[in-house]
Image (cartoon, rainbow, N blue to C red; front, side):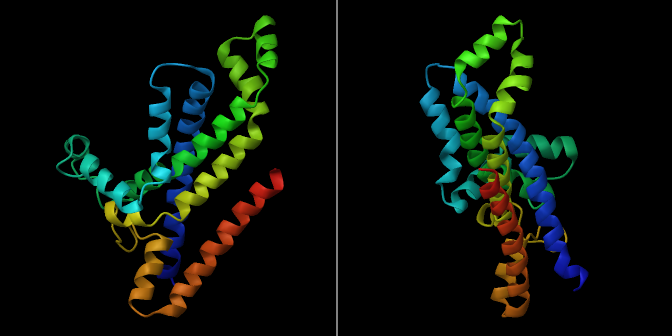
Length: 217
């Protein structure tokens, strides 16, 4: 197989990997806060966190363009700092994948933290554990299955992201073309053999990831 075939595969893995790391960190942090804290507006905030899960990808892509595009406040700031626009870059694909994958990580981690017996955490506090030590040595290990499940599912979602990525990052071969966008272009051009090969690759990767999730439950 040629380098042109493997380029979207490598880029998809890189994008999904970095997006997975971002949602892992952000998801655990916010899930811990939301699972243990009660405050006014919590339900509205949590609904906003989960919104990308149900919004059409085109809407997510549209909002990303409005926020990070050349005419957006953040887009203008990023272009001034880095001397280039964010849209139609590798980082745009990472941001799009992170946004759509975050709800899966957040919801899974929150479920794990909510399932922890508070008496166990209170006992650790009585023994002198600070909040960070409690989080790292007690809460995280007890919620590890839910966290790993969320990490794998969110990475799989990032790997398969298409609509928002196509709108926000485009389909530039070697730069922003991921497996889903490559499949779309291959089908549109009538190259079904190439499309099937990419379909086989993404099915194999996704199957392995879901198998791991099923195995650890």
